[in-house]
Length: 81
Image 1: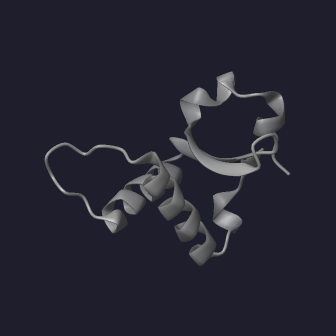
Image 2: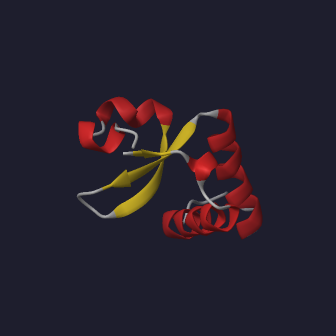
C-alpha cells in the first residue's frame, strides 16, 4: 500500500528515509556523500513525485520505490488507505 508521506510526522519520515538509505548502501562513486545528503536526495524524489513510500504487508516493511516500478508491484502493495 502506498503511504502518504506528507501525512507522516517529520521525524518519522526522516527515520524511514535514513533507514532506507543505510539499507540500500548505494555507491556514489569516488566522492563521499553524507547521510544527510543521501536522505535529502530521496526526500526530493518524494517531493517531485518520482518515488513513493510503499508498505508491504507480506514483508511487513516500508520501502521507497520509483514511481515507474509501481506497475510491477502486487495490487495489495499499491492501494492507499
